[in-house]
Amino acid sequence: MKTTIYLDVDGVLNAVQKRYPSEASTGWNLWESKPVNGWPILFAPELIDELNTLSAHPDVTFKWLTTWTHDAATILSPAIGINGQEWDVLDGDQHGWRGADWWKLQAIQSDVLSTKPDQFIWIDDDISAERVAIEWIAARDNGYAISPFTVEALTRGHVEEIKALVNCVPEPA
Picture 1 (tube, rainbow, N blue to C red):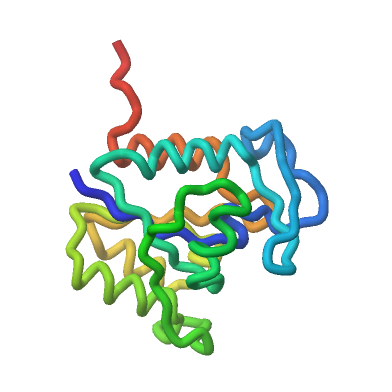
Picture 2: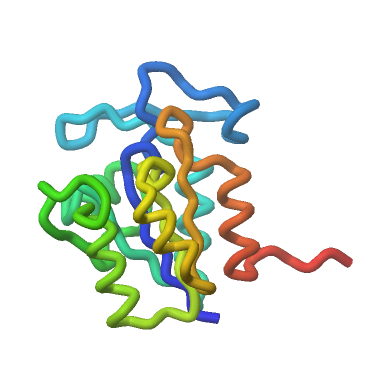
């Protein structure tokens, strides 16, 4: 089954806080912090490795859906080691921040309509605060939303959930 994963940066790859998140809450025991394009980026290298492995899966396509837009591919990717330089970048009117006018919702709606993936996973820390986005995803039988806590970013549990959705987890014996 072909899966498209739409990936945000801040609050997803970048744990937006000043201290390292705990292993107990995230599942990641090592965190790195580095400035990228003038912004502090706090990320778990193991998370990046997991996403790189997942992106190499033949039935998985990643796309950037972030305010970083093309800088996610050209600047952030090489800086933190994620293999996202060749991923498509969705963008839109970044002045639309809420409800049906949220530019990310409009961008993903358009992309899903035009590409018709078998299933899609939208990963963004802001989804949980956007009722219209939640309702749109809930109305699809092939769409999934993952909305991590901004200060923790994507956890090991989230990654395991994603792998299960794309059938990358071995079946129990």
